[in-house]
Length: 399
Ligand code: SAH
Image (cartoon, rainbow, N blue to C red; front, side):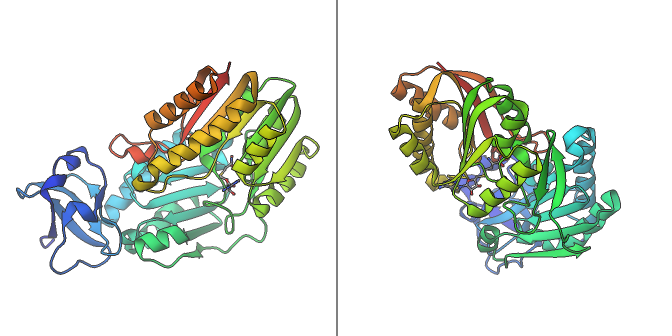
């Protein structure tokens, strides 16, 4: 192989990259005089010309280089991608029991050393989500390997709007193997049936990462409880609680009409339609009006969308989490269960705990932590990339 172009770290960033974080931001490098193409393989060196890692360059992304290897002997080839895919698939085969067989995340980006690639499996259908334009030249390789392992009915590829903007790509969803299923794909999870819309749903179809947390919420809900599920999407927590627990009342809130329509269908599909009241509302408005009306609950689930998209938004997001949890804690009966989640990678576990400690102080309620949870085990996290530990889920008893 001919020598690769070298990208030089600026001196201030030198220390930050001893830790093998795969994202090299535009602010961390000295831009080369002539810019490499999207997907060009480059070597990252520090200002003393010490080799650090090898990655793929994207002149259109704030993440200028994504590193895939820290071994100078290794090149980013089809073989490397295949090896990484095999390793990711091998991990999931260890999880192949119960619900994991039906729907699971096969590849989780940086956590599987494949920055910019997510692959989810819904029964016989695979959905690839590409979040790095620089990986696109490997798409055929990826599809071939996935097909080799799973022989699925379809493999589709999606680029969402946000990735499109940040990576300089067009948002799209196309089928690379097979075609769009004419019906939603039915999967079983935690003893419930779900119809997953792999083309028009949020994320690649649904939120697989909360699978075990939904069961935990049901486990910690007391018989006879009044339950509030805030940001219910297609009913994940509400239906799990209804299925596994004798409740007095369940109210589930989301701002999306489409999500709620689907939630109602899931309630019917699982013969739980009489157990849940669905409400279309903004989470702050819904919580404030219930608090003003003197409503009380025994379990409240808070699963808002990602509130901190970037480091700059962190403080604003933490204030929003505080407000949300502050409202919820005040509505919980003594001994009630709070299941509070944050899927913002920028919010660390410590930040989230501190936020909750602040809520305890302000409400003068003791928050007794029962479980500190994360994403389901098919979403591992890597020490070198703390953002992969993005999902926080604290289950607490409010005294
Ligand atoms: N709890 C769900 C996943 C929630 S994802 C599960 O277990 O699958 C976050 C949800 O928040 C989405 O369904 C989105 O429609 C909803 N949402 C976004 N902004 C909102 C707002 N301002 N008020 C209420 N819901 C909102």
